[in-house]
Length: 419
Ligand SMILES: NC(=O)c1ccc[n+]([C@@H]2O[C@H](COP(=O)([O-])OP(=O)(O)OC[C@H]3O[C@@H](n4cnc5c(N)ncnc54)[C@H](O)[C@@H]3O)[C@@H](O)[C@H]2O)c1
Image (tube, rainbow, N blue to C red; front, top):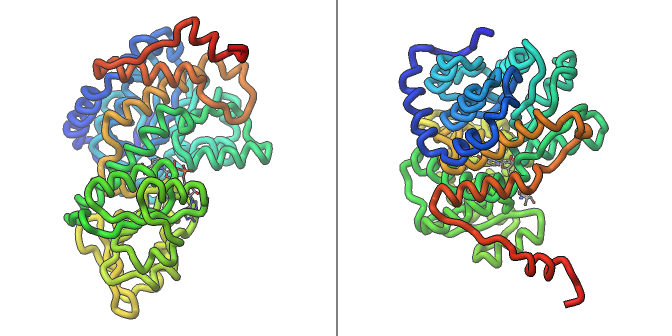
C-alpha cells in the first residue's frame, strides 16, 4: 500500500536519526537475535500506532527485518517527524504520517495501517492510547477477524481498554505493555521526567533553577517530572487527587497543595494526570503574569486550551512551540507545545535508552501475542513477568552489570512458613 507522508526527499536525515537510535538500542537488538528470528513474524502483519520518530522507526525496522509486514500510523500529526516517516517509507514500511495533517487525518492513517497490516493475512497491533483498537472495534470491524490481538503502550490506553473490557465490548486479547515494570518504571518516570523538562527548557530557553514548578499528578510520570525539576534546582509543588500519592510527594520532599492554591504560587505548570481539564478557567484566573503551561499527559485536554483560545484577546507565537495568550486583564499565559504531549510536540521524546527498554517489551508482547493469542481470552492481560525480567537482565548485561539468582535454599525459605 502506498505510504502517506509529507516529503520523500527528507529521507536522508531520517535515516541518520534511525541509525543513531539503532546504535543506542542494545536491548531491542538482543531481543531480535534471541527471540524474534524464530519465524513467528514471517508473513504476519504488525500495525503500529506510535509517535513517528526515530525510536519507533527502529522498532518497525527490526520487525520488518524478521519478516513482518509492518505498517506505521501516527496517532496525531503533532507527533510526526517527517524526515523519519520518509526514511521508514524508503525502507519498505507502509507509513501513514504527515506533520501537516489534521487530527481527523490521524484516524484515517490508523485505518490505513490496519488495512495494510491485514492485506495479506493476520496481524497483531502495537497500539497507542488504544487508537487502533478503537478503530478496529468501530469503523473497521470487518478487520477484527484478522487481528490476533494488541499490545498497549500507554497508561491512558490501558484506562480506555479497561472501560471497553468492563462494557464487554473488547473482542481480542490485549497485553498491557504499559504495566510491565520495564516499561512504566523507566519510560513513564525517567523518560517523561527528562524529556519533558528538556522540551520545556529548549523551547523557552529559560532555566528551571529557583523557579516554582507545579506538577499536577504524582503518578509515574509526575514523580519523574518532579524529581528531575528538583534536581535542576526548581522549587516543586505537587497537586494530586489521591491522598496517598499526595503524601508520597510530601515524603519525597515536595509541597502538596490543591490545584487552585498552587495556581497562585507557580511560575511553571506541568500536567501529567491523563485527566480532563486539570487546569481550567478558575486556575488560569489565579495565575501570575508570564506563567508557563505544559502538558506531559497522554491526552491533550488536561489544560483547557479551548477556553484559553476562546477567551484570550490575542494569541501569538512568541518562540517556536510557545504561544502567548493575552488575557482580558492584560496577564500573559504561555503555553508550550499547544497543550499536547510536550516532550513529543516540542522535543524528541524519551531518551533512546529508555525507548530501547519499552520497545524490547513491545517486541516481546507482539511475539507473545503472535504465538499465544489463540489460547488467550478477549480482554486485558499482563505481560508474563519472566519476559519483563528478561528485558531488565538484557539491559543490565548491556551495561556490564548483573544481579544474583536465589539459591535453592533461599527459594525454599521464602516459599515456606515453618522456619
Ligand atoms: N509524555 C509522555 O511521554 C508520557 C509517557 C508515559 C505516559 N504518559 C501519559 O501521562 C499520563 C499519566 O501517566 P502515569 O503513568 O503517570 O499515570 P498514573 O496513573 O501513574 O498517574 C496519574 C496520576 O494523576 C492523578 N490525577 C488524576 N486526576 C487528577 C487531577 N484532577 N488532579 C491531580 N492529579 C490527578 C492520579 O491520582 C494519579 O496519581 C497518562 O495520560 C499517560 O498515558 C505520557
